[in-house]
Image (cartoon, rainbow, N blue to C red; front, side, top):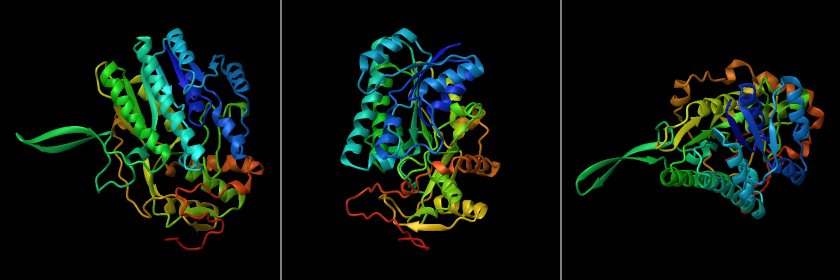
Length: 401
């Protein structure tokens, strides 16, 4: 079957995707400089689940399944010629691009983190596109983006999948155009994703590179059927204030006896997707590439929306956990509505995993098993969006305005 290169294939989304594609019969090549593991050391906070070395993971996968995954340690943002040589040698059907610093709070933590996020993310994306153009090969790029490029105000309309029809007044009268939905980044991380979109637009227009950009919601869950085959294959579980995603954090906090950390009023509405659906969506995107000459194909990779306070109430109702409200370290609206179109993946056959299907219990089971690995001092979010804000370590029993 065809070769697939997974950039960032050791990460939270990349690892289960690599295993899922390998199981489906693709020849998977992981490229990763293990930067996420190095950030663990920098933050002084490990994954709640114990993560084995990448070599051990790959050896265990081959032992269990008989399938081989190749691995190359390449810094995609820096080592351009190594990347180019690999693409030429492998001639992949697709390159899956996860090789970006993925956390908004981390991107706002310090000036160094801001600069690192921009340097890594933008250079990685540009190097990938430049290398494919340089190679002369017809390679489909599938990029994991974020719903955050849209911002979180919808003006009462459902956010379309990438493109917005507008009417423009000109001398000849009204003209209808398709434009990319206006970007409204909420962090340095989100800003890099909006810049990615412009890079994609250019290389698609100028070099004819086939591109699929997946605007993903907040990921919850941790394991897939493949990562559950053996503890050596287990996926990351980030719970800290920089990398932990909100629902996973709430479920973990309930298990270890920490109050649920709701920011502000909890009125922030977010789009969500289960990690298993992330893997399924990547596979669907590979199997349904845009035709040569088509514009960038954009999917909204999200299956449902919820307000943060409603998630907290659900978790509290299941576990009895206390809900506490903390000053919001982010600069964002206290309340927002969010409507999202996700017609494309539904038409391709995605059967969404939603909260009501009971997989929250899987997350609870994982946190119970590894609760002793939790560092309680890392739970509170301490990365501030502005120097005028203050870190709130105590919280309150009512919403904070």
